[in-house]
Each structure stands twice: as structure tokens, then as C-alpha cells.
Image 1: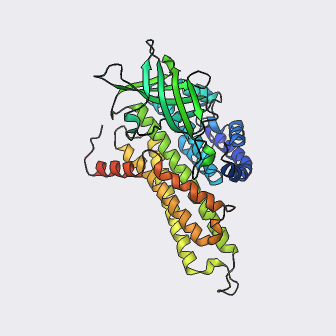
Image 2 (image 1 turned 180 degrees about the horizontal axis):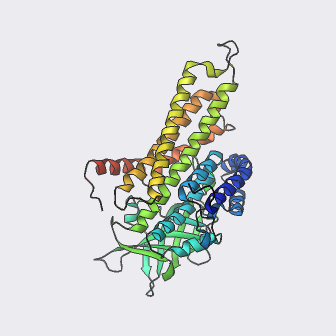
Image 3 (image 1 turned 30 degrees about the horizontal axis):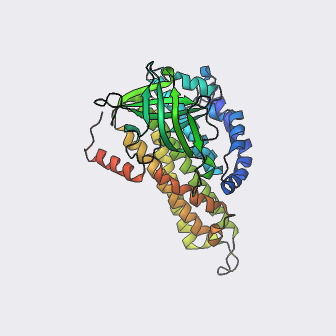
Length: 398
């Protein structure tokens, strides 16, 4: 964290206080958004107003200049009140963080993202595709060259969080104009442009307020200045892809830490307030099983929190890794946070009891929200495979 006397530290304190002021309303609205399968418009406007969307944007680009580790703490706090809101806005931070990563490497090609974010524009990620299990290394969406360095995109994207509100959508597509040398194009399309439409397909188990609808690209154009990378198809080392992973994975981990922390808060409140006839009116907290479940939840949360903090500080510190060894640690932090949050929610429900099954109980919603963690790319299967291969020496370090 910055020196306490620095402007960045002052910005952190001011944003933290502003966030505290809006969090009660955000928590109150979360249940309604979930019930109605509605987008978090009110949350978005309040968070935009206090500067949350431009928190890590450098001051000279109109932002608050917070460090990414500082922002991760605020993001986790937001997630304890509204997981869907925090998760969806991680897609915005996804791109701000990527641009920051390139900038610290001396690459100004994504500085326009920081300028737009500093001006209040909202970014979203259009990477999900049905049937594409190779992720960023491949695409089932066509990227057709326009001849001037730009591209037009044709195909379908899924799980587009922030569908009702994004100003810029980061997409990738396959340029097969030279069949012998297919390339993956990473670029951005603007909402004001033509050739894209959202279809309301999102009606999910949890995280409903993200409104992660399908996006159909029907010639949506990315101008040359908004094409960030054109890479060979397949897994290739590149700072832009590294920046995406270095921004999105800690952000996801922070969200699931927030879910776990809130579940533990609800469990502790229930255990200390509910009384037991068996224990002659003493609280449920006096039951050994409740004590054991509480201890397991606390240990799980503190361990996950420590790993995420360590990895975020390392990745965004002056000594950040410059080779492929960083990815397994980023993946491990996210996976551990997800699994930890799921276990904590399960333990919390056991502590609270059958009332946690009611739709009116916040734990019921958290139970549904936390299940999505296993499916964020890379999913659990791919994550474990990559980490295992790395430590078994089966992956070459770039």
C-alpha cells in the first residue's frame, strides 16, 4: 500500500469512505436484483459517481491512481454486499488492469483504454464462445480484415457480463484470410457502432444481476487504433494476454473471498443469537460442532485471503515475474479462493440450519452465487491441469 502521506493513500481512504456510504443500499438492492433477474443499474451509477470505476486509472488519465492490490481489497468488500455487482465490474477492471500492465512494460498501445476509463466509460469482455474450449488461443468468431488495419467481427459471444451498459467490448476473433497462417485478433468495438446486438438469454442459477447475455456480432467494426494485438493462432507468450490473466484472476479471487467472508459473518451472527433448548437456553455457539465448523471456515478464509494478497502483491510489485511461472500462482490463488468460498458457504449453512434454505435468506443466494466460481475460464479442470503440468515439468516456461 502507498505511503500514508501520499496522494494515492488519500485517494484510497476517500474512496473507501465513499464506498462505505453506498454499501448498505447496494446490499439492500442485491436481493431484488436477484429475484427480478435485473441488472444493477442503481449500483452502477452510485459506484461510477464515487469513482470506483476509475479507481486504478492513473491520475494523469483522470483516475484516482490506486494500486491494484488496494483495489482488490475494495472489490472484495463490495462482494460481501453484492457478489453480482462486484463480479460484473471485475470485467471492467479486467481491461483497466491489462492496460496498466502494458503501460508498466513501456507499451502505450492500450493507453486509450485508460483515457476512456478515466472519462467514465465502461468496458466489458467478449471472450466466451459456445464450443471454444481453447479460450484466447482460438476463436469461433470470424475477424475479417477491412484493409486499413481494422477488422469486422462475425459470430456469437456468450456470458457477456455488463451487457446492458458497456461502452466498449473487448473481443477476439480468428483471421483466416491467410489459411496457412491463421491469426487471433484482439480488439475493441464501441456500443455506438453498428453490427452488434445483445439477446437476453441470461436466466441463471446465481450471479443473476450481472446480466451476462449473449452478444451477436454481425459485422461490428474495430477501427485500427482499437486493435491491440494480432497474434498467431494457438498458445503464444504475449504481454497483452499475460495482462488479462494478471488482472482478471486476482479480481475473481477477491470476489469469492468476499462471498466467503459474508457467509462467515452470517454464520457467526446466527450462532451467537440463536438459542438451544438442548443447552437450556444457551446460544448455538456453545455446541462443539458449531465451534468446529466455525474454526474450519475461519481457517479456510484466512488461508485463501493470505494467498490472494501474496499473489496480487507479487504480480503488481516491482519484482513481478516476467516468465510463465506467474500463471500457475495466479490460477492457484483464484482456485483456492473459489474452493474456499464454496466450503465456507456450505459450513455456514450447516451452522445456520434449515432457515438458510429459504429464498428470503441471504445465504440461499450466496449458495447459488458461489457455484459459478468453478466455471470462470480457465475452469477448474483446466486450472488443475495447467498447475499440475507446470510443477511436473511438462510445460515450457516462456
